[in-house]
Amino acid sequence: MNRYVGAIDQGTTSTRFMVFDHTGSVIARHQLEHEQIMPRAGWVEHNPDEIWERTRTVVKTALATADLTAADLAAIGVTNQRETTVVWNRHTGRPYYNAIVWQDTRTDRLIAALDAAGHTDLIRERTGLPPAPYFSGGKLRWILDNVEGVRADAERGDALFGTLDTWLIWNLTGGVRGGVHVTDPTNASRTMLMDLETLRWDDELLRIFDIPRAVLPAIAPSSNPAGFGTTNPDGPFKGAVPIAGVLGDQQAASVGQVCFQPGEAKNTYGTGNFLMLNTGTEIVRSNHGLITTVAYRFGDDKPVYALEGSIAVTGSAVQWLRDQLGVIAGAAQIEDLAGQVADSGGVYFVPAFSGLFAPYWRPDARGAVVGLSRYSNNAHLARATLESIAYQTRDVVEAMQRDSGVRLATLRVDGGVTMNKLAMQIQADLLGVPVSRPVVAETTALGAAYAAGLAVGVWDSTDELLANWHEDVRWFPSWSGEQRERGYRRWHKAVERTLDWAELD
Ligand SMILES: Nc1ncnc2c1ncn2[C@@H]1O[C@H](COP(=O)(O)OP(=O)(O)OP(=O)(O)O)[C@@H](O)[C@H]1O
Ligand SMILES: [Mg+2]
Image 1 (tube, rainbow, N blue to C red):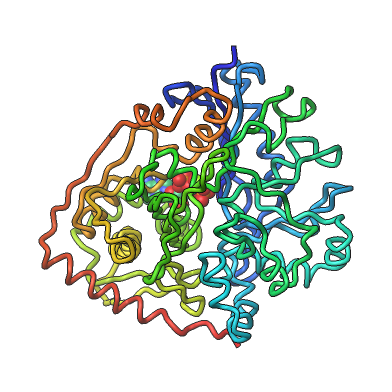
Image 2 (image 1 turned 90 degrees about the vertical axis):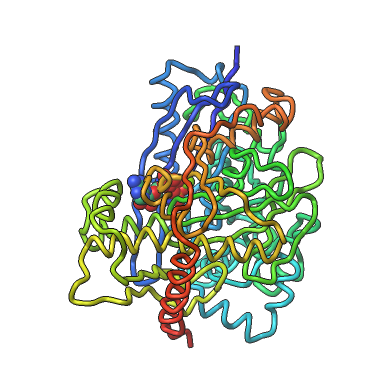
Protein backbone atom coordinates (compact mmCIF):
# COMPACT_ATOMS: atom_id res chain seq x y z
CA MET A 1 0.00 0.00 0.00
CA ASN A 2 1.30 3.45 -0.85
CA ARG A 3 1.22 5.13 2.54
CA TYR A 4 4.17 7.44 2.22
CA VAL A 5 4.83 10.79 0.60
CA GLY A 6 8.19 11.77 -0.91
CA ALA A 7 9.69 15.24 -1.24
CA ILE A 8 12.54 16.51 -3.39
CA ASP A 9 14.12 19.56 -1.71
CA GLN A 10 16.40 21.19 -4.25
CA GLY A 11 18.25 23.82 -2.14
CA THR A 12 20.97 26.36 -2.81
CA THR A 13 23.73 24.20 -1.39
CA SER A 14 22.32 20.71 -1.67
CA THR A 15 19.54 18.48 -2.93
CA ARG A 16 17.64 16.17 -0.57
CA PHE A 17 15.08 13.49 -1.09
CA MET A 18 13.01 12.59 1.96
CA VAL A 19 10.11 10.23 2.58
CA PHE A 20 7.54 10.96 5.31
CA ASP A 21 4.77 8.92 6.89
CA HIS A 22 1.31 10.06 7.95
CA THR A 23 2.60 11.52 11.23
CA GLY A 24 5.23 13.59 9.40
CA SER A 25 8.07 11.38 10.64
CA VAL A 26 11.07 10.81 8.39
CA ILE A 27 11.18 7.31 6.86
CA ALA A 28 14.08 7.79 4.43
CA ARG A 29 16.48 10.51 3.35
CA HIS A 30 19.54 11.18 1.27
CA GLN A 31 21.29 14.47 0.51
CA LEU A 32 24.11 15.62 -1.81
CA GLU A 33 25.78 18.99 -2.29
CA HIS A 34 26.51 20.57 -5.65
CA GLU A 35 29.16 23.00 -6.84
CA GLN A 36 28.88 26.74 -6.20
CA ILE A 37 30.31 28.33 -9.35
CA MET A 38 31.54 31.91 -8.83
CA PRO A 39 33.13 33.09 -12.10
CA ARG A 40 33.55 36.67 -10.85
CA ALA A 41 32.64 38.96 -7.96
CA GLY A 42 28.88 39.03 -7.54
CA TRP A 43 28.17 36.14 -9.92
CA VAL A 44 26.85 32.81 -8.59
CA GLU A 45 25.91 29.90 -10.83
CA HIS A 46 24.91 26.23 -10.59
CA ASN A 47 25.18 23.55 -13.23
CA PRO A 48 21.59 22.38 -13.98
CA ASP A 49 22.80 19.01 -15.32
CA GLU A 50 24.71 18.39 -12.09
CA ILE A 51 21.59 19.22 -10.06
CA TRP A 52 19.46 16.83 -12.13
CA GLU A 53 22.11 14.14 -11.69
CA ARG A 54 22.23 14.76 -7.89
CA THR A 55 18.44 14.60 -7.79
CA ARG A 56 18.40 11.20 -9.50
CA THR A 57 21.06 9.90 -7.13
CA VAL A 58 19.41 11.10 -3.89
CA VAL A 59 16.04 9.64 -4.94
CA LYS A 60 17.50 6.27 -5.88
CA THR A 61 19.72 6.10 -2.80
CA ALA A 62 17.04 7.10 -0.29
CA LEU A 63 14.54 4.63 -1.75
CA ALA A 64 17.07 1.80 -1.86
CA THR A 65 18.35 2.46 1.67
CA ALA A 66 14.85 2.25 3.15
CA ASP A 67 13.88 -0.62 0.85
CA LEU A 68 11.09 1.37 -0.79
CA THR A 69 9.79 1.51 -4.36
CA ALA A 70 7.58 3.91 -6.31
CA ALA A 71 4.62 1.77 -5.25
CA ASP A 72 5.14 2.85 -1.61
CA LEU A 73 4.64 6.51 -2.52
CA ALA A 74 1.16 8.02 -2.79
CA ALA A 75 2.66 11.16 -4.32
CA ILE A 76 5.75 13.33 -4.31
CA GLY A 77 6.20 17.03 -3.76
CA VAL A 78 8.93 19.28 -5.11
CA THR A 79 10.38 22.28 -3.30
CA ASN A 80 13.26 24.39 -4.49
CA GLN A 81 15.62 27.28 -4.02
CA ARG A 82 13.55 30.09 -5.46
CA GLU A 83 14.38 32.60 -8.24
CA THR A 84 17.36 30.62 -9.55
CA THR A 85 16.91 30.65 -13.31
CA VAL A 86 17.50 28.01 -16.00
CA VAL A 87 16.80 28.19 -19.74
CA TRP A 88 17.04 25.02 -21.80
CA ASN A 89 16.16 23.67 -25.24
CA ARG A 90 13.02 21.54 -25.42
CA HIS A 91 14.37 19.32 -28.21
CA THR A 92 17.81 18.55 -26.80
CA GLY A 93 17.11 19.02 -23.08
CA ARG A 94 20.38 20.96 -22.83
CA PRO A 95 20.63 24.15 -20.78
CA TYR A 96 21.88 27.15 -22.79
CA TYR A 97 23.76 28.48 -19.79
CA ASN A 98 24.38 27.66 -16.13
CA ALA A 99 21.57 28.39 -13.70
CA ILE A 100 21.88 31.98 -12.44
CA VAL A 101 21.43 31.76 -8.68
CA TRP A 102 19.18 34.04 -6.60
CA GLN A 103 22.22 35.56 -4.87
CA ASP A 104 23.75 36.66 -8.19
CA THR A 105 23.96 40.45 -8.62
CA ARG A 106 24.89 40.68 -12.34
CA THR A 107 21.55 42.26 -13.23
CA ASP A 108 22.01 45.26 -10.92
CA ARG A 109 22.44 47.64 -13.85
CA LEU A 110 19.41 46.22 -15.65
CA ILE A 111 17.34 46.81 -12.52
CA ALA A 112 18.74 50.34 -12.13
CA ALA A 113 17.74 51.00 -15.78
CA LEU A 114 14.16 49.80 -15.15
CA ASP A 115 14.00 52.15 -12.21
CA ALA A 116 15.39 55.04 -14.26
CA ALA A 117 12.76 54.33 -16.93
CA GLY A 118 10.08 54.78 -14.27
CA HIS A 119 8.83 51.16 -14.00
CA THR A 120 9.41 50.64 -10.27
CA ASP A 121 5.92 51.55 -9.07
CA LEU A 122 4.19 49.35 -11.63
CA ILE A 123 6.40 46.37 -10.79
CA ARG A 124 5.78 46.84 -7.06
CA GLU A 125 2.07 47.26 -7.49
CA ARG A 126 1.56 44.36 -9.84
CA THR A 127 3.97 41.80 -8.33
CA GLY A 128 4.42 42.81 -4.67
CA LEU A 129 8.18 42.96 -5.23
CA PRO A 130 10.64 45.83 -5.18
CA PRO A 131 12.64 45.53 -8.45
CA ALA A 132 15.89 43.79 -7.46
CA PRO A 133 18.57 41.56 -8.99
CA TYR A 134 17.33 38.85 -6.59
CA PHE A 135 14.23 37.95 -8.64
CA SER A 136 14.23 35.74 -11.72
CA GLY A 137 12.79 38.05 -14.40
CA GLY A 138 16.03 40.02 -14.75
CA LYS A 139 18.11 36.84 -14.80
CA LEU A 140 15.96 35.41 -17.61
CA ARG A 141 16.34 38.66 -19.52
CA TRP A 142 20.12 38.49 -19.03
CA ILE A 143 20.27 35.01 -20.58
CA LEU A 144 18.06 36.11 -23.50
CA ASP A 145 20.33 39.09 -24.13
CA ASN A 146 23.74 37.56 -23.53
CA VAL A 147 23.70 33.93 -24.62
CA GLU A 148 23.80 33.41 -28.35
CA GLY A 149 20.75 31.97 -30.04
CA VAL A 150 18.50 31.90 -26.99
CA ARG A 151 16.24 34.80 -27.93
CA ALA A 152 15.48 33.43 -31.40
CA ASP A 153 14.80 29.97 -29.94
CA ALA A 154 12.62 31.49 -27.22
CA GLU A 155 10.52 33.35 -29.75
CA ARG A 156 10.04 30.13 -31.73
CA GLY A 157 8.97 28.27 -28.58
CA ASP A 158 12.07 26.05 -28.59
CA ALA A 159 13.61 27.50 -25.42
CA LEU A 160 12.05 26.92 -22.00
CA PHE A 161 12.50 28.98 -18.86
CA GLY A 162 12.14 27.57 -15.39
CA THR A 163 13.14 27.84 -11.79
CA LEU A 164 14.53 24.60 -10.34
CA ASP A 165 11.08 23.11 -9.66
CA THR A 166 10.24 23.48 -13.34
CA TRP A 167 13.59 22.11 -14.54
CA LEU A 168 13.32 19.01 -12.33
CA ILE A 169 9.64 18.34 -13.08
CA TRP A 170 10.26 18.61 -16.83
CA ASN A 171 13.05 16.05 -16.51
CA LEU A 172 11.16 13.78 -14.09
CA THR A 173 8.12 13.66 -16.38
CA GLY A 174 10.07 12.60 -19.46
CA GLY A 175 12.19 15.56 -20.60
CA VAL A 176 12.50 15.67 -24.39
CA ARG A 177 9.85 12.95 -24.56
CA GLY A 178 6.84 14.88 -23.30
CA GLY A 179 8.19 16.59 -20.19
CA VAL A 180 5.64 18.82 -18.44
CA HIS A 181 6.59 22.53 -18.43
CA VAL A 182 4.98 23.90 -15.29
CA THR A 183 5.51 25.85 -12.07
CA ASP A 184 3.35 26.91 -9.12
CA PRO A 185 2.23 30.39 -7.99
CA THR A 186 4.77 30.62 -5.16
CA ASN A 187 7.68 30.24 -7.55
CA ALA A 188 6.02 32.34 -10.23
CA SER A 189 5.44 35.11 -7.68
CA ARG A 190 9.23 35.57 -7.48
CA THR A 191 9.78 36.38 -11.16
CA MET A 192 8.52 40.01 -11.27
CA LEU A 193 6.40 38.76 -14.21
CA MET A 194 3.27 37.44 -12.46
CA ASP A 195 0.23 39.45 -11.41
CA LEU A 196 -0.17 38.80 -7.68
CA GLU A 197 -3.97 38.99 -7.88
CA THR A 198 -4.74 36.91 -10.95
CA LEU A 199 -1.74 34.53 -10.60
CA ARG A 200 -1.16 34.88 -14.35
CA TRP A 201 1.80 36.10 -16.38
CA ASP A 202 1.28 39.79 -17.05
CA ASP A 203 1.55 41.10 -20.63
CA GLU A 204 2.63 44.57 -19.59
CA LEU A 205 5.46 43.21 -17.44
CA LEU A 206 6.52 40.84 -20.22
CA ARG A 207 6.73 43.87 -22.50
CA ILE A 208 8.77 45.88 -19.98
CA PHE A 209 11.18 42.99 -19.45
CA ASP A 210 11.10 42.11 -23.18
CA ILE A 211 10.39 38.45 -22.54
CA PRO A 212 8.53 36.26 -25.08
CA ARG A 213 5.56 34.49 -23.50
CA ALA A 214 6.40 31.19 -25.22
CA VAL A 215 9.38 30.70 -22.91
CA LEU A 216 7.24 30.65 -19.74
CA PRO A 217 5.78 27.58 -18.00
CA ALA A 218 2.12 27.02 -17.10
CA ILE A 219 1.19 27.99 -13.53
CA ALA A 220 -0.68 25.22 -11.64
CA PRO A 221 -1.97 25.35 -8.02
CA SER A 222 0.70 24.40 -5.44
CA SER A 223 -1.28 21.37 -4.32
CA ASN A 224 -3.14 19.50 -7.03
CA PRO A 225 -3.40 15.84 -8.06
CA ALA A 226 -2.72 16.09 -11.79
CA GLY A 227 -1.28 19.46 -12.78
CA PHE A 228 2.41 18.60 -12.48
CA GLY A 229 2.31 15.25 -14.30
CA THR A 230 3.58 11.85 -13.24
CA THR A 231 7.12 10.59 -12.90
CA ASN A 232 8.39 8.74 -15.95
CA PRO A 233 9.15 5.05 -15.16
CA ASP A 234 12.49 5.40 -16.98
CA GLY A 235 13.57 7.97 -14.39
CA PRO A 236 14.90 7.60 -10.82
CA PHE A 237 11.54 6.51 -9.34
CA LYS A 238 11.37 3.56 -11.76
CA GLY A 239 7.61 3.92 -11.66
CA ALA A 240 4.75 6.37 -12.15
CA VAL A 241 4.20 8.57 -9.08
CA PRO A 242 1.99 11.66 -9.23
CA ILE A 243 3.84 14.92 -8.62
CA ALA A 244 1.09 16.57 -6.61
CA GLY A 245 2.75 19.44 -4.73
CA VAL A 246 5.14 22.27 -5.61
CA LEU A 247 6.20 25.12 -3.32
CA GLY A 248 9.20 27.45 -3.23
CA ASP A 249 11.42 26.42 -0.31
CA GLN A 250 10.42 29.21 2.07
CA GLN A 251 6.73 28.73 1.41
CA ALA A 252 7.24 24.99 1.91
CA ALA A 253 8.92 25.64 5.28
CA SER A 254 5.95 27.79 6.26
CA VAL A 255 3.58 24.93 5.39
CA GLY A 256 5.88 22.47 7.21
CA GLN A 257 5.60 24.73 10.27
CA VAL A 258 1.80 24.57 9.84
CA CYS A 259 1.47 28.37 9.53
CA PHE A 260 -2.04 28.20 8.05
CA GLN A 261 -3.69 31.03 9.99
CA PRO A 262 -3.28 34.75 9.33
CA GLY A 263 -0.75 36.13 11.82
CA GLU A 264 1.32 32.93 12.02
CA ALA A 265 5.00 33.27 11.14
CA LYS A 266 8.16 31.20 10.81
CA ASN A 267 11.81 32.05 10.29
CA THR A 268 14.07 29.66 8.35
CA TYR A 269 17.86 29.85 8.79
CA GLY A 270 19.61 28.28 5.79
CA THR A 271 21.94 29.88 3.23
CA GLY A 272 19.95 33.04 3.91
CA ASN A 273 17.09 33.74 6.32
CA PHE A 274 13.48 34.04 5.35
CA LEU A 275 10.79 35.23 7.70
CA MET A 276 7.30 34.62 6.43
CA LEU A 277 4.02 35.87 7.91
CA ASN A 278 0.73 34.40 6.69
CA THR A 279 -1.71 37.23 5.86
CA GLY A 280 -4.56 34.96 4.72
CA THR A 281 -6.39 35.60 1.47
CA GLU A 282 -5.65 39.30 1.78
CA ILE A 283 -2.78 40.94 -0.11
CA VAL A 284 -0.95 43.13 2.43
CA ARG A 285 1.45 45.67 0.95
CA SER A 286 4.55 46.51 2.92
CA ASN A 287 5.58 50.03 3.80
CA HIS A 288 8.66 48.87 5.67
CA GLY A 289 10.74 46.90 3.20
CA LEU A 290 9.09 43.50 3.19
CA ILE A 291 7.81 41.84 0.06
CA THR A 292 4.36 40.50 -0.65
CA THR A 293 4.29 37.01 -2.01
CA VAL A 294 2.06 33.97 -2.54
CA ALA A 295 2.23 31.64 0.48
CA TYR A 296 0.44 28.79 -1.28
CA ARG A 297 -2.56 27.95 -3.35
CA PHE A 298 -4.13 24.60 -2.56
CA GLY A 299 -6.39 23.22 -5.30
CA ASP A 300 -9.17 25.57 -6.29
CA ASP A 301 -9.11 27.45 -2.98
CA LYS A 302 -8.29 31.13 -2.97
CA PRO A 303 -4.58 31.84 -2.84
CA VAL A 304 -3.09 32.57 0.58
CA TYR A 305 -0.59 35.43 0.73
CA ALA A 306 2.35 36.28 2.95
CA LEU A 307 4.62 39.11 3.92
CA GLU A 308 8.23 38.04 3.68
CA GLY A 309 11.51 39.35 5.03
CA SER A 310 14.25 37.90 2.83
CA ILE A 311 17.86 38.08 4.07
CA ALA A 312 20.51 36.99 1.58
CA VAL A 313 23.39 35.97 3.84
CA THR A 314 23.10 34.19 7.20
CA GLY A 315 24.22 30.53 7.18
CA SER A 316 26.39 31.32 4.16
CA ALA A 317 28.32 33.84 6.32
CA VAL A 318 29.27 30.83 8.46
CA GLN A 319 30.36 29.01 5.30
CA TRP A 320 32.38 32.07 4.33
CA LEU A 321 34.28 31.91 7.63
CA ARG A 322 34.93 28.24 6.85
CA ASP A 323 35.74 28.35 3.11
CA GLN A 324 37.13 31.80 2.42
CA LEU A 325 38.81 32.70 5.73
CA GLY A 326 39.51 29.24 7.14
CA VAL A 327 38.58 30.47 10.63
CA ILE A 328 36.65 27.23 11.30
CA ALA A 329 36.89 23.77 9.73
CA GLY A 330 33.16 23.05 9.78
CA ALA A 331 29.96 25.05 10.32
CA ALA A 332 29.29 23.38 13.68
CA GLN A 333 32.63 24.64 15.08
CA ILE A 334 31.43 28.23 15.10
CA GLU A 335 29.48 27.50 18.28
CA ASP A 336 32.60 26.57 20.29
CA LEU A 337 34.66 29.40 18.84
CA ALA A 338 32.02 32.07 19.46
CA GLY A 339 31.46 30.59 22.93
CA GLN A 340 35.05 31.42 23.93
CA VAL A 341 34.10 35.08 24.38
CA ALA A 342 31.22 36.63 26.31
CA ASP A 343 30.55 39.26 23.62
CA SER A 344 31.82 40.35 20.23
CA GLY A 345 34.24 42.90 21.73
CA GLY A 346 32.56 45.73 19.80
CA VAL A 347 32.97 43.96 16.45
CA TYR A 348 30.03 44.10 14.03
CA PHE A 349 29.92 42.09 10.81
CA VAL A 350 27.40 43.05 8.13
CA PRO A 351 27.57 40.29 5.48
CA ALA A 352 26.14 42.34 2.62
CA PHE A 353 27.80 40.11 0.02
CA SER A 354 24.86 40.36 -2.39
CA GLY A 355 23.94 43.88 -1.36
CA LEU A 356 21.32 44.08 1.38
CA PHE A 357 17.89 42.51 0.91
CA ALA A 358 15.01 43.14 3.34
CA PRO A 359 14.28 45.57 4.79
CA TYR A 360 16.90 47.77 3.10
CA TRP A 361 16.91 46.61 -0.56
CA ARG A 362 20.29 48.19 -1.28
CA PRO A 363 22.12 46.47 -4.17
CA ASP A 364 24.90 49.05 -3.69
CA ALA A 365 25.83 47.72 -0.22
CA ARG A 366 28.80 45.40 0.28
CA GLY A 367 30.03 43.47 3.30
CA ALA A 368 31.90 45.13 6.17
CA VAL A 369 33.50 44.20 9.47
CA VAL A 370 33.60 47.28 11.68
CA GLY A 371 34.64 48.10 15.23
CA LEU A 372 37.94 46.20 14.93
CA SER A 373 40.69 46.89 17.47
CA ARG A 374 44.06 45.31 18.20
CA TYR A 375 42.17 43.21 20.78
CA SER A 376 39.79 41.61 18.21
CA ASN A 377 40.27 37.94 17.40
CA ASN A 378 38.63 35.03 15.55
CA ALA A 379 36.27 34.34 18.44
CA HIS A 380 34.95 37.91 18.31
CA LEU A 381 34.44 37.57 14.57
CA ALA A 382 32.64 34.25 15.05
CA ARG A 383 30.37 35.80 17.65
CA ALA A 384 29.76 38.86 15.47
CA THR A 385 28.75 36.45 12.68
CA LEU A 386 26.11 34.79 14.86
CA GLU A 387 24.96 38.20 16.03
CA SER A 388 24.68 39.38 12.43
CA ILE A 389 22.24 36.55 11.76
CA ALA A 390 20.18 37.59 14.78
CA TYR A 391 20.34 41.34 14.08
CA GLN A 392 19.28 40.90 10.47
CA THR A 393 16.37 38.84 11.76
CA ARG A 394 15.47 41.58 14.22
CA ASP A 395 15.40 44.07 11.32
CA VAL A 396 12.82 42.03 9.42
CA VAL A 397 10.81 41.22 12.56
CA GLU A 398 10.55 44.94 13.33
CA ALA A 399 9.43 45.61 9.76
CA MET A 400 6.87 42.82 9.96
CA GLN A 401 5.41 44.15 13.20
CA ARG A 402 5.09 47.64 11.75
CA ASP A 403 3.46 46.41 8.55
CA SER A 404 1.01 43.99 10.10
CA GLY A 405 0.41 45.33 13.58
CA VAL A 406 0.97 41.73 14.75
CA ARG A 407 3.28 41.59 17.79
CA LEU A 408 5.33 38.47 17.73
CA ALA A 409 4.87 36.37 20.88
CA THR A 410 7.27 33.58 19.90
CA LEU A 411 9.54 33.13 16.89
CA ARG A 412 9.12 29.71 15.24
CA VAL A 413 12.42 28.70 13.70
CA ASP A 414 13.90 25.95 11.53
CA GLY A 415 16.84 25.31 9.17
CA GLY A 416 20.51 24.39 9.53
CA VAL A 417 21.64 27.30 11.74
CA THR A 418 18.99 26.43 14.35
CA MET A 419 21.12 23.41 15.29
CA ASN A 420 23.42 26.02 16.88
CA LYS A 421 22.19 26.52 20.44
CA LEU A 422 24.31 29.61 21.04
CA ALA A 423 22.99 31.24 17.86
CA MET A 424 19.42 30.63 18.99
CA GLN A 425 20.15 31.97 22.50
CA ILE A 426 21.64 35.08 20.89
CA GLN A 427 18.52 35.32 18.74
CA ALA A 428 16.23 35.27 21.79
CA ASP A 429 18.48 37.81 23.56
CA LEU A 430 18.59 40.27 20.65
CA LEU A 431 14.91 39.94 19.83
CA GLY A 432 13.48 39.90 23.33
CA VAL A 433 10.99 37.11 22.58
CA PRO A 434 11.27 33.32 23.00
CA VAL A 435 12.51 31.23 20.08
CA SER A 436 10.92 27.82 19.43
CA ARG A 437 12.19 24.95 17.27
CA PRO A 438 10.02 21.96 16.28
CA VAL A 439 11.03 18.28 16.42
CA VAL A 440 11.05 17.90 12.63
CA ALA A 441 13.38 20.75 11.66
CA GLU A 442 13.30 19.58 7.99
CA THR A 443 10.26 21.75 7.48
CA THR A 444 11.04 22.55 3.84
CA ALA A 445 10.81 18.97 2.61
CA LEU A 446 7.94 18.30 5.01
CA GLY A 447 5.92 21.22 3.62
CA ALA A 448 6.33 19.96 0.05
CA ALA A 449 5.22 16.51 1.19
CA TYR A 450 2.18 18.05 2.90
CA ALA A 451 1.20 19.90 -0.28
CA ALA A 452 1.46 16.67 -2.30
CA GLY A 453 -0.23 14.48 0.31
CA LEU A 454 -3.16 16.88 0.72
CA ALA A 455 -3.78 16.72 -3.03
CA VAL A 456 -4.07 12.93 -3.13
CA GLY A 457 -5.90 12.44 0.17
CA VAL A 458 -3.07 11.16 2.40
CA TRP A 459 -4.16 14.01 4.67
CA ASP A 460 -7.75 15.24 4.55
CA SER A 461 -7.19 18.81 5.60
CA THR A 462 -4.64 21.25 6.94
CA ASP A 463 -6.27 20.80 10.39
CA GLU A 464 -5.06 17.24 10.41
CA LEU A 465 -1.49 18.47 9.97
CA LEU A 466 -1.55 20.63 13.11
CA ALA A 467 -1.31 17.49 15.25
CA ASN A 468 2.03 16.63 13.60
CA TRP A 469 3.78 19.76 14.96
CA HIS A 470 5.67 19.32 18.24
CA GLU A 471 8.04 21.68 19.98
CA ASP A 472 11.55 20.38 20.59
CA VAL A 473 13.42 23.30 22.24
CA ARG A 474 12.57 26.82 23.40
CA TRP A 475 15.10 29.59 24.14
CA PHE A 476 14.22 32.53 26.40
CA PRO A 477 15.69 36.07 26.29
CA SER A 478 18.19 36.85 29.02
CA TRP A 479 19.43 40.35 28.10
CA SER A 480 18.14 43.53 29.70
CA GLY A 481 16.16 45.88 27.48
CA GLU A 482 18.92 48.46 27.81
CA GLN A 483 21.59 46.03 26.63
CA ARG A 484 19.39 44.96 23.73
CA GLU A 485 18.71 48.47 22.47
CA ARG A 486 22.33 49.62 22.79
CA GLY A 487 23.50 46.70 20.67
CA TYR A 488 20.78 47.28 18.11
CA ARG A 489 21.66 50.97 17.74
CA ARG A 490 25.27 50.04 16.99
CA TRP A 491 24.12 47.43 14.48
CA HIS A 492 22.39 50.17 12.51
CA LYS A 493 25.55 52.25 12.57
CA ALA A 494 27.40 49.26 11.13
CA VAL A 495 24.75 48.80 8.42
CA GLU A 496 25.20 52.43 7.40
CA ARG A 497 28.90 51.78 6.79
CA THR A 498 28.09 49.20 4.07
CA LEU A 499 25.84 51.43 1.94
CA ASP A 500 26.75 53.22 -1.25
CA TRP A 501 29.81 51.05 -1.85
CA ALA A 502 29.28 49.17 -5.15
CA GLU A 503 29.23 51.48 -8.16
CA LEU A 504 26.29 50.61 -10.38
CA ASP A 505 26.68 53.10 -13.20
N1 LIG B 1 26.02 24.44 13.78
C1 LIG B 1 25.85 25.42 12.91
N2 LIG B 1 26.05 26.71 13.27
C2 LIG B 1 25.86 27.72 12.39
N3 LIG B 1 25.50 27.53 11.12
C3 LIG B 1 25.30 26.27 10.70
C4 LIG B 1 25.46 25.16 11.56
N4 LIG B 1 25.18 24.04 10.85
C5 LIG B 1 24.86 24.45 9.61
N5 LIG B 1 24.93 25.78 9.52
C6 LIG B 1 24.64 26.61 8.34
O1 LIG B 1 23.36 26.25 7.90
C7 LIG B 1 23.29 26.32 6.49
C8 LIG B 1 22.64 25.06 5.99
O2 LIG B 1 21.35 25.02 6.49
P1 LIG B 1 20.24 24.18 5.75
O3 LIG B 1 20.69 22.79 5.63
O4 LIG B 1 18.94 24.48 6.37
O5 LIG B 1 20.34 24.94 4.43
P2 LIG B 1 19.92 24.38 3.09
O6 LIG B 1 18.48 24.01 3.16
O7 LIG B 1 20.92 23.45 2.56
O8 LIG B 1 20.08 25.69 2.38
P3 LIG B 1 19.60 25.85 1.01
O9 LIG B 1 18.23 25.32 0.95
O10 LIG B 1 19.70 27.33 0.91
O11 LIG B 1 20.59 25.04 0.24
C9 LIG B 1 24.69 26.48 5.98
O12 LIG B 1 24.82 27.76 5.45
C10 LIG B 1 25.57 26.31 7.20
O13 LIG B 1 26.64 27.22 7.21
MG1 LIG C 1 16.81 24.63 2.21
